[in-house]
Image (tube, rainbow, N blue to C red; front, side, top):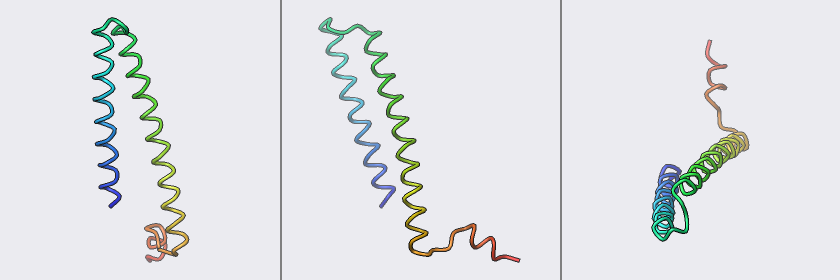
Length: 84
């Protein structure tokens, strides 16, 4: 389920990226935006997206660890500690 949710989010992000690129191209063609500004905007958007992805991954890891702890599920580290 988590995998499908991630794929759905990635698909949505890709679709949004394509739409933004289309609109920027239209603005370039109309002369309302130059190619340099368009490229700069896309790079900034990409950087913010990557930063947000890292932040969300860390939040997800933290949440999963909390759930595992609350449920009392043995972790790989716990199991390793029991081995002779």
